[in-house]
View (cartoon, rainbow, N blue to C red):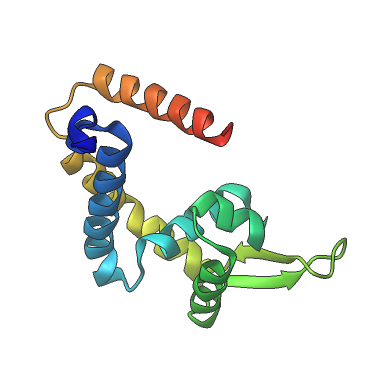
Length: 146
């Protein structure tokens, strides 16, 4: 049997993939009462962090494709949570910024995100979380080098 030498259930790449999907689904559930999903929340967060950001750069930070980001941007713009402007330097680039309503929603959602993180990491010592962070960063750097 070809699979006898490889245990998918203990493969760190598979474990992180499954856990990432679970966390995303549960975080979407937690955000639902606020009327946004995880991708939209992450977009608001990163726009706030950068004050103004190109749509393509935001897609990379959120970890979604360009077409998926177009959908998120259109939803956030329609909800008056962000503004979209054309870059003066590159007319193809769209610059995104938070509106006051976007800032208010993000501010209101931060305690929810903090509570979610606390629930997911309950019972795990901070040293272990710090180690996990370093390991995942290194694994992502290794994968980017492929």
